[in-house]
Amino acid sequence: MSAASAEFKAAAAKLRGKPLVVNFWAAWCDPCKAELPRLAAAAKRYKGRINFLGVDVQDSSRIATRFAKRKGVTYESVADPDRSIARSQGLLGLPVTQFYDAKGLQIDVHRGELKEDVLRSELAKLLKSA
Image 1 (cartoon, rainbow, N blue to C red):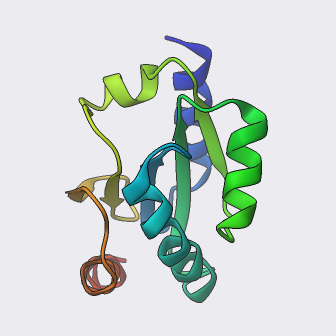
Image 2: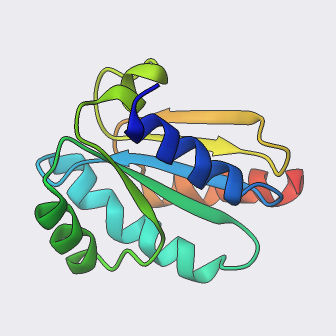
C-alpha cells in the first residue's frame, strides 16, 4: 500500500461515525474549480453532522494548499500525487464525489461536476442514513 493510500485510509477511519463525503479533485480540473466552493460551503453548513474529506490528485502540495484556500476549503484533504488512491477506488476522471453512511458503507457516487441541487439531495440522503 502506498503512503498516500495509508494516509487516506487513516483520515477516512478517523471520520467514521458520521456520514462522510469524499471528493476527489485537482487544481487543474475545471469542473473541480466550479464545485469546490459548493462543497466548502456545505462542509461549513453541515459541520458536526456530516464529515468531508478531500483527495487532491496529482498537484504539488503548494499548489493544492493555495487552491483549496482560495476556494474556501477548511476540511482535510489528503494528497494523491501518484493517483494510487484514485486507482484503488477505480476512478478514471475527475471530479468524483463519494457518499458514505455513518458505518462507512458507500451509499452513492457522483462522477463529474456536482451541481448544487444534486449536492443538496445527496446530503439529505446522508442525514437520513445517520
